[in-house]
Length: 465
Image (cartoon, rainbow, N blue to C red):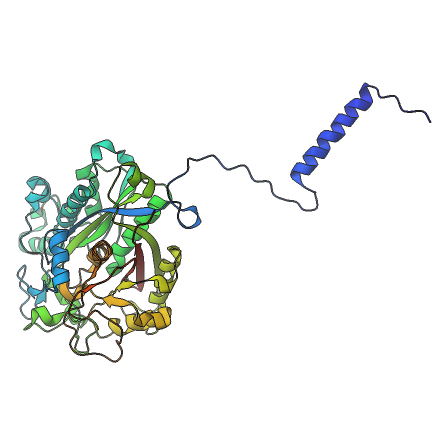
């Protein structure tokens, strides 16, 4: 049998067939129609990684202005000692209202934290958070001159903005005429001016936003700031919340809703979360700020790491404009989402900083939600309410409560729920009554629930590399 001569044409055909075969092998069979995805762009590896490769986010600095003191140390010492910051209202005339007590910030002098001229162009809620930010930056040892300004962002939560200043402006309008208003009236009262003033004063040019999700605002602001860093839109975030709404209109508005306590003769005993004789929350003011950083950024500058911001859970009740769902559904979902986002199980949680408002409706529903989600573990948990000592800072509450969570982790102390004297059969968990407790705490859940069915929860963990 004669063999076919191997000429140039045959050799070319053989090469073509071989190339086609290699291409077919690479792409797979036509029947499978396998999608070929482009190779991912090469990125430098980052420290940690976290769940599903997300950037890990840590807390490196804290700052606070509260009814218990003008520093984090004063505030934390007051909580551990079980002191109340509630007293008769002095900032305005509330005679004739059913609630005449509040958690006012005492002795705050804006010029100690900022230029006097600048401070006069700010509402009190903005002054509070600018002061808290300065403290937090110093606490974090963050040298802004060495940082890239457009990689540092700001996220602030508050409920109503410059409410007292708006009320005062309206009084000027009625008594002196609209043209007697300060030309800074609008910039002063706008809710976003707290974040705006932080960016302006400290030269921060990165991601900036404001959340006004009622009493969940500060907690959600911190959670959203964590997401900004996870998504590599910033390396550092100034995150927190602020409120200063103690004025006749603000107090009266809550009074007519019957949301506030009327225990005016015993201010320090008025806020009593989970106690059978609670009769409403105590309004308050203040601010809190955390410096959040990506783990690799914090390690690169040898920062002191206080804790890890590990999980965020946000949900809506879709039930009622002010009341939570009686089965606690929205709170349950937010808590579960935060724990799952942290890559944990409910049994991993050691302590819950409760929303704990001292209202007849909120406290038993939050208790039910905890028991539903955690099952038998609910009775092993320590649960306490910061509001028992400082009242309710509304949109800023989640930030100062988050700071208490961080201090719980770093100091191994759980602050008490004070004024717990008369057990409520519907509130039957361990609320750390009246006396602080030493305990090694590794995982903390912080709850914040607000009007409009807004629910926000955060998980903080003891940092481990």
